View (cartoon, rainbow, N blue to C red):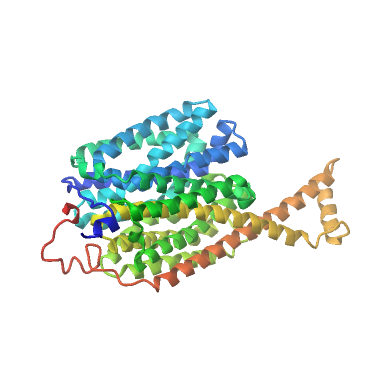
Length: 537
């Protein structure tokens, strides 16, 4: 008896679409919905908090509820698409998602607000995994690289254009459009899929042998870990019983998932799919890439908003000219190169650009304005376009596309988990470094400090009035805090630089990409019997 199906999960069979342009457009919109909604919600949370009169803790939990359910469902979506087909999974999802997005700004009850956000996040978790499955199930091989480029494009585009959208919504249209943008976009996705997606039969064999236990264990374990990471910085990590219980419980459930996949007759996502050297290193590079890219996405808007005091609309021009417009050129260039050179070279080029951008950003001073960040944004946008895209191509090339159901499950866990891990640790690092620099800056200052008294005297003369002394002291404290924040953001850039260098070191350990549809020489020397892999099984 062959162990291949047991080791790698179910075969992914599908029907090639006769409307590839419609499917590619649907993939483009679906990818953008995920990226934009996540980014727009994070940037627009202060306005949402004000609109619903939420306290800091309530807003924090709303953010967790609006994101965590994604990982609960996302790892199982590939299996659902394999069994039911993309039409049955995606079309109802997009329409219900539009309805919930329309309703949320009209809700005033706190419980309903949290429930609707949880449901919305659960549906949002369907979009990206379904995108990957459509590429390999329903697109001809010659469109695979284009499909994967769309999947990769959402990372730099959503991080930057999402910030621009929040600025427009806040200042011109209203915070409600954080949600209402999907009322327009997601029905278009449904329409494109109705017209372009092939009609497929339900895979009764897979449905009867479903590994429901494995899916629930992986989804629940990763959700618990996600919530623990998301609340870790606010609740001070292991000093909180809630965070400790969530992380420990998630780890135990994940161990249970691995045991389950080893003993069941028809495993859904056996761990063997990530045990090869190339795939394991590829996932490690995604984690390093996420740390390297998140430094700029956290530090630049953080500095410009908290230290300089700019609103999102005032920062939009930086992202439009530094990221939104150039990213399309970078992605096209990446496609051109990946068809001609080894993916490892593209990964290295991308990580090198991000390392240079982080090194540039580490020279941050309190005098910087948005224009000073333009080279940093350009380098990071180029790096994100090359590194993430090429890494995904490399991972897929080292996997069997016919087994993409199992591979996709782990891609979603790594994708969502690495982003949350990165943001949690970077926010903790930022908080601790700000405290450290604040202590260093205030260390030499005492009540008998002559320089302090001179500065306060000058400020008191400037302010005058009965409250001159208080205003002077407040001004000094604000200046110290601002400088501590600047130094902390510079430290985040340094940490991002270190992870980019670590990613480059990991690339050196990668093996060559196996010959296949994504290999640069495949078009020059196609196999004699060129059959669509998705038709196998």
